[in-house]
Length: 381
Image (cartoon, helix red, strand yellow):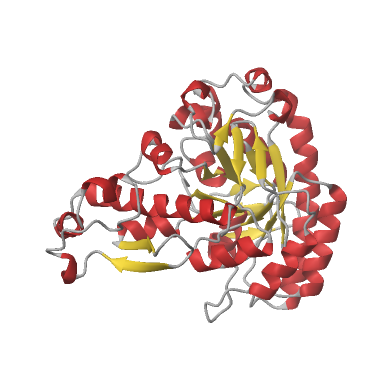
C-alpha cells in the first residue's frame, strides 16, 4: 500500500517510515541528545500525562518548551495520556474511572483525583511545544467485549472533536509561537543529518493526530475512521493493543485500519516496535512507529543484528557465556559507537559487572539498528 514519503513538522522533515524511541519522561535512559543524534534518531515520543505530573507542563513551558528542556532539536511527539487510560484505569479500575467528560486517575496517596479531559490534554501538549500532538482517546484491549469497544469508539470520537476545538483555540496562546513561525528555535543550526532538514515556515504549526479505535471489530474500526476523517486531522494513528491474547500481531485489523486512513496523511502505528511487526506494518502503509521495546531490550542485554544488506535480522543475548571471550563487534556492518570501538567480550563484561556503560552502549546499538532498518524500508531493494 502506498504511504507518505516525508513528514513535515516544525522541527524538520523526516523521511518515512521512521521509528521514534519512547522518551516517556523526557529522557531516553542512559543517552543524551548527542548520542541520539549520532544514532540517527529522527524524533522522540514523550508522555504528556506523566510530564504534567512531574515536572509540570507550566514548568516546562517556563523553561522554553520540551525541546529546550531536553536539549533536543529534532521532532517530538507528545502522547496524550490515552495509553494510560488503558494501562492504568482499564487494567486496574481501582486506579481511576472513565466518564463521558474525562478520565479520572487516582494514583496519588489517599486516592486524590487527577482529572484529564480532552481540553486539558491538549493544553498540556501545547505548553510542551511538541511538533505532533495526539488526541486523547479511550484505548482498549482487542479482547474487550463489543459493548465496551463501541463505548470506547463513541468516547474517542467525541473526545477527538473536543481536542481539535481546543487545539484551534490554543494555538494563538502557545508559548514560542512567534519563534516557531520564524523557524528560529534555538539549536536549529546544529542539525546536519540528511534525514532532518529545516522545514519551510508554513509547516511551523504543530500537527494534530487522531487515534482510530475499535478493537478487533472491523465495523467499529470503519465507524471510528469515518467519523474522525470527517472531523479532519493532520494525521491518523492505529489505536488499541495491537496484539491478540496469544501475542500475535493483529495484521488484518492493522491493514484494514491503514486502508481507512487518508492516503495523503501520515499513518502512525502507535506502540509498534517489534522489528518484524514494524516491517509488516510499513508494508501496509504505516510511516510512523514508536515503542519502548528497543531501549528496554538493550538494558536487558537483548540486542538486534541485521544480516547482510536486507531486512533479515537476528537477536543476540550479550549476557550469554559464549560472548565472554568473543573479540568480534556486535555487528560487522553496524557503524554505531558500540560496534565501532568495542567487542562483544567487553560488553558482556560490562553487563556482568553492572556498569552503567553497558546500558549506554547497548541502547546506542539498538537504536542505530532501528535507524538502519527504517532507512532500508524507505528504499527497499
